[in-house]
Amino acid sequence: MENKGAALQNSGNGTDGRFYWGAATAAYQVEGWPLADGAGSCVWHEFSHTPGATHAGDTGDLATDHYHRWPEDMAIMRRLGLNAYRFSVRWPRVLPEGTGRLNPAGLDFYDRLVDGMLAAGLEPFLTLYHWDFPAALQRRGGWPNRDVAGWFGDYASIVAQRLGDRVAWWAPLNEPFVVAEQGHLVGAHAPGIRNIFSAGHAVHHQLLAHVRACQAIKAAVPGARVGIAVHNATVWPATGTEADRAAAQVAHEWHNFPLFAHPLVRGGYPPAIEPVLRPYLPAGYEDDLDALRVPPDFMGINYYHGYHVRHDPGNWLGYSAVKATGVPSTTMGWAVRPEGLYQILVDADAGYGLPALFVTENGASFDDRREGNAVRDPERTAYIRSHIEAVLRAKRDGVPVQGYFVWSLLDNFEWAEGYSKRFGIVYVDYATGERVVKDSGLWYGEFVQQQAAGRPEGVARPYGRP
Image (cartoon, rainbow, N blue to C red; front, side, top):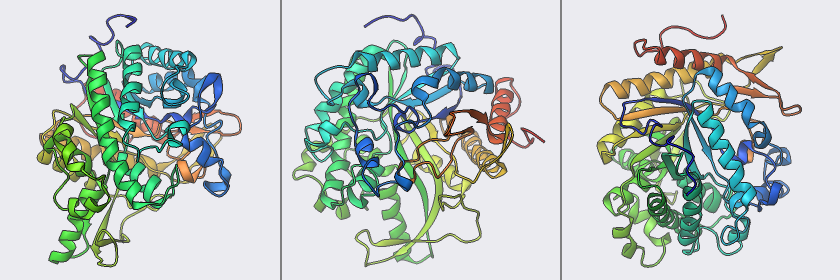
């Protein structure tokens, strides 16, 4: 392995009590140029080019041009005072066919990107898979093919050998639930499959792939911290009836961290969801459960909203969602429930006792208003502020939460929603690529800088433009 210096040893690897305040992105959503410099196609490239698959036919062909403008984006984070950046590597940019032949230009790009983070004072948090599955491997069966674990392990080994001297924090998978449910059951995300058996196989095989990647990373980087970033939406029963409470437990185990944390920590699927999921899992899945017991070094909590459920025997899961009332919602239609983030953090710690938790995604889409060189987004500022309050409350209550990453650094390609939804703390003019830090970004930057200066934890003071 090429040695780039002692960055890993001095990178704040969790032993010094450092708290990470960062921002997050995903490669396909921000990089653009998905086929440039020898890269291979991914399922999202092909899905977004399929008529009717995305809003207005939007694709990630240009996105925010982070592929070329990343130095500007590093400078923005440095100016805001952030100390961490969560990013992802595009599997087919490194391995155009997903396995076999390397693309040196792809590895070189991520090599420069990591060096740029360190130069900007940003701790790299690397996600190996944020949904851009190689199209060549999709044609060989994709996640429902058990061979995917070996393919993914080989990919993880290549990236770890190249970047492991500078990257301490690794998440092989981002939101494997969404990959299985939206990509293989509902069909609203790439690869656009609607098959419950494919979804069940995708759940199980992502777990196998995660374990193989974890082993590969630690073989290449013995001091690496390897975790998993999981989807969460707090679930409450619509009423106090036993049926609604049972429905809420099933929803929680299906939608949230237990679906993947339970196998990795306990060696089995969560007890309420396993009977429901069992018919759709691969035959003989039970034989894999002992090998899946590889507890993560950390768990990334992705959280945006919460909802209520009621018992519904007509649904295959036995529940249906109840529309929230009396609380604000984002332009995604998601109810703003910061107390749910606190509950998820407390429950994840109580349930699995992992060494560290991170809020690896948290943010909101609103209709932003640009006025010259300013973007007024008071709703997003209030959203981020209230959710940071929940994180700090959990931390004070003893939950080992060690970082918070706002989603997202930049407005970007929001999957099936295309460019119709803006989550960034930095506004992107999609016609010109111009970046404008929103009021929420100014607030977040000033808050982070006050934390670094040793001010008491809290978010009472208003920040940003008057």
